[in-house]
Image (cartoon, rainbow, N blue to C red; front, side, top):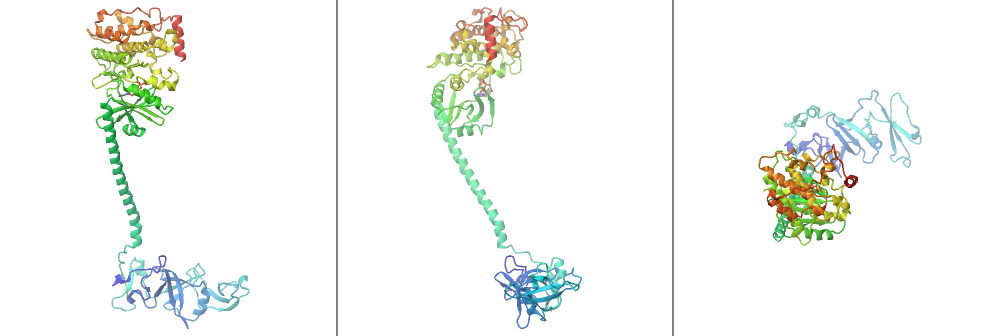
Length: 574
Ligand SMILES: Nc1ncnc2c1ncn2[C@@H]1O[C@H](COP(=O)(O)OP(=O)(O)OP(=O)(O)O)[C@@H](O)[C@H]1O
């Protein structure tokens, strides 16, 4: 039967109502103790105290079950008036309590005041036995009489504290238990019992359910969005791969948006390196097709010129020239997409030649031949002659079979528009490969022979590596005048490691290299001739005149001719 007597409240903020209190006309009789009836009225909890001639209703503001106290106020905010009515009446089963800290019980005086001056026409004043009587504010009031016994004042003058002694549930409450009438119905007999588990309220359900429900909804929406997004992206990816393959088969470059580039490169995650014209990232058009994406340093314009140039570059197809698979001209973003070559650049293998990456002279010879074929194609195989201007080991990539692929062709033209002239500063990394006439027009006109010069130095680097070119400190001279090569022909130590038989390849590459780096562009062979030399017998090759004889090919005894000094100064100044 205790289930029938669950704790309740009149309003959400009302005091808890449980034994010995019960709600009048709502809770069964056995839920409360006689005289402890409370009434709920408009969410207020009301307590009726017996008085003569009529009972008086007070509002219950709180109930302290541990101290068996009930805090009451007057609904009309005029407690002293009620005090007057209560005078002499019994308020059983309650009684006024004295404040436990109040050593001298107070007398309470009741004053009648002019109703127009006071909202409550009665004022109760507490005065200690020793004490001061009136405060001057009550001058217009008339003292009626010293009131009944001790009224218990709480800190709020509009609230009284009543106490009850019977039934005594203090012990039960102190032990965290509840109290009820004994089963035998004897009024005095009280027993404790365990409080039933609190029913989960609707508010609780709402408090927990709403956020949890919302979170689940958000998760479900998020999951739907992700699935939708996934399939949309997948669909776009498939469409892109399809388009890419179509273009690939038709030898057309695919145009990518910057968002595509961003996705292909997995948010520009895997950076392969950074060159003069921009950074290179690894990417994947699909699981099978890996690409390298060169994001060009930002450019101006609407991209029309860029697209035209790219159109020309895309027509270039040669086994030794990296194929441009696609491009991006989106806003100010410009990018070029190439096949990805996992073996990286030739520089990794020739510098120095005797390390573990050394490919062997046979293979290096093939690579030199491949590069020469690629350059020859750029010079003679296209509608317009394409000058590379930056042939060096970094711009030669090696595919799975170590077939060389020339990259960065056309970039000089593409990016020149932005850089006004060939920038020596920008091309610092490849300074040693730049033909004299590119540095100074005193040496002749810039032409396809400038690429021959760079190729010659690439050959010399392939055989000697930087080991023989001291590029530190005053290295410009050594790079431009690799006199050490002549030591090779004279059988002197040039730090090159080779076996018997390799000698011929090395000498062949050295001879061709020397022909290619002749000062006068007219004396340099064309790429067609270079190819014949590379493919022919080295015995038929003549060693070019020692153009370094009178120059600074060693750092210690160098004497630079006046005309070359001019070049040297100019090169350093830029
Ligand atoms: N298609 C590619 N496959 C694999 N690696 C590549 C590819 N293209 C470029 N790289 C690598 O990216 C890096 C940067 O290349 P990039 O051509 O931009 O600069 P660089 O040749 O080192 O310098 P510069 O532009 O001055 O010649 C290099 O390490 C190069 O090996």
